[in-house]
Image 1 (cartoon, rainbow, N blue to C red):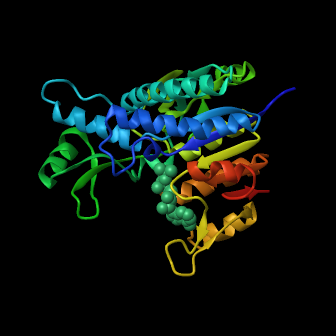
Image 2 (cartoon, helix red, strand yellow):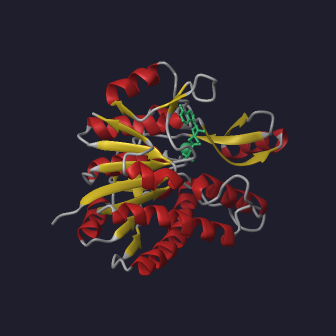
Length: 313
Ligand code: ADP
Ligand code: MG
């Protein structure tokens, strides 16, 4: 019997929460916890593709490179994304292998270095919005703006940060390889950090200084491989309307039409819940059956429809 496919996306914070410094030991322990959640999805009879974020990890890498910039050349951002796909992919692969062994599951676990195509004419290239990497002094930020053409912004009184474009993902180069691995019942880790962003120019693939939103990249992946279920694991057990206010109301199941209505009301801020809802809407509108947004600790209950927020046609 052919199994159903689930794509599960989780935030970079899941492996490197804000209250931790991000040692290898911490991240490896967090990977073990994430693996327990992922194996629950396998247990529910799905072939699983995992997408992870990389915000804190790529931020740390950029700090390391900035500090050593006068000794070792700083690498472009797309290369840093590739690097974090490797490090995070390794930690998850290792943890998942161990978890599968413990549960007597026979799946192989594979990390795919994933390249995601963006449109060079995407409007995002004209208005960079995504803050990345370390905080700088005004002087350093201004010097980098002149020397390297960085766009820098003042970030909530904490210093100056570089902002980069966050274009829409439009294609996944390794799609058919990922599909073949799923057919062979492998657990696949792909599109880490939203994927390595490239444009196609004169028939060549060229890395660009941008980052792709991992929620949008995982939605594209879910659509392209015909996933049945798209799961987004994040810091809250459910999506709410009037989030953070006294009249907050947690949502159990909403239709795409309701999701659009709440979006128009401004219920889902850009940069946090906004892209998740947008990613969910795109998946359902392309023929997907259901999206589940919840936290890793609620996943077990949510898969039994006793928690989480489902978005349906
Ligand atoms: P991730 O790292 O998983 O992408 P984000 O911080 O980007 O997580 O986005 C998820 C966060 O969005 C939640 O943890 C919550 O704090 C916040 N949030 C904003 N609006 C809402 C809402 N309407 N309902 C639930 N959470 C919301
Ligand atoms: Mg996010």
